[in-house]
Length: 222
Image (cartoon, rainbow, N blue to C red; front, top):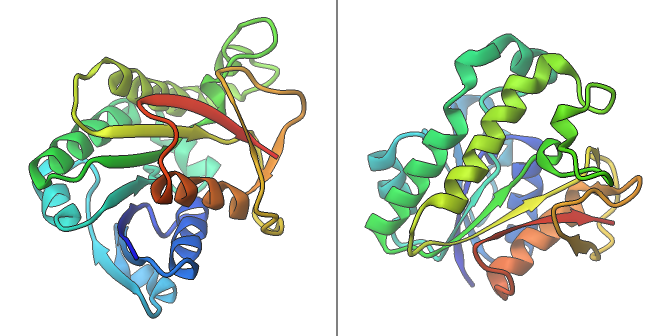
């Protein structure tokens, strides 16, 4: 049994990862902005705590004595809310990466798995999805740029944290079944790829149970 801290445990991806970890017998610390709004994720083997992924000191205290950390965070919970954030959201993912790396280093926790955003994958012509207005809505571009800045920071920082970013496709199925299978790729979108949240969670916990990929970003699809 491992102990895993999951930031963003109240969102769709976070909930799926929390459930997968619990079902495999791991202890989960579910980190959310407001525990009063996500009390339904509490269950045997799950501790729900309030946290701020951009706060290094608080992050260090939360992840202490854990074996691994998952980041499935977002500054807002819907496309409309993300669009309303505009450029105020510009530093969110950079601040989150900095706080996670600092907090984990302070606490001596090495394994970090993050959920990425399809918008900074490349299409078949080598162009970023976020740069194609026919594939990605312009009003969400600031959010996508913030996500991309977080990935760039991960790649640039010299850290002892063993990180991996798994980037699912745009078509994530909340109701899709857990098939227990997935494929991993590089930085390019593969056809009309899709994936269930349940199988995204399988991949995340697989990489905690048996780490195979290190300090890289991979696409994941069905």
